[in-house]
Length: 69
Image (tube, rainbow, N blue to C red; front, top):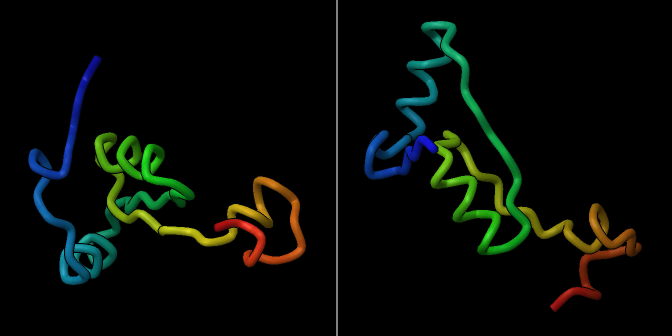
């Protein structure tokens, strides 16, 4: 299995994202709702990780985010 991590790909800054957009290159982004999924997304080499607080809404179907501590 192939392994790409942030240490392999380098730090992705806003300047890197802007440059890729101007060149027409693809940019990947995913949402991580917890630490284990954030690590997997990072290790997969995804450019942008959105740390979401909407787990209670999206995954659990609750009305607000206050229910999940």
